[in-house]
Length: 185
Image: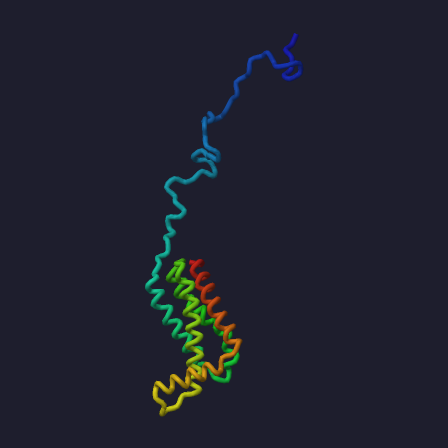
């Protein structure tokens, strides 16, 4: 008579046979463990992030260069040909980018720099418009006070609703471009 097959009439009465392993299993190994020397095992002494250093932030240099960039952007905007004055408002985005570049790249992710970038971009636009009007009313014999008064009154008389849109673009563009350039580093 033979022993019943496992599971046919119940459990087998034969003793369990030994299971053979080529390597003894390691008990209580963590999930995802790979034995040393096997494919996928980490190389000892290798750190993939060792060559990466955190970028050094130079906020003071950014705070020095951003107003200079705003001054240069405003003067470049104001010294553009006068016949193209109506289409120059869209260059506000370029002014905002020029101001945002040193703030974002050098200053990093400081939360005070995007509002500063917005204000400096709007200031660059104002300086550019005042420079344009100064070129229009410039007279050789005028005193600086009368020249400033004539420039401001000319600027106020020339304000249009589209200029408010350009100031909104300068504020928004300065804020967003400063934040984006900070996130790319």
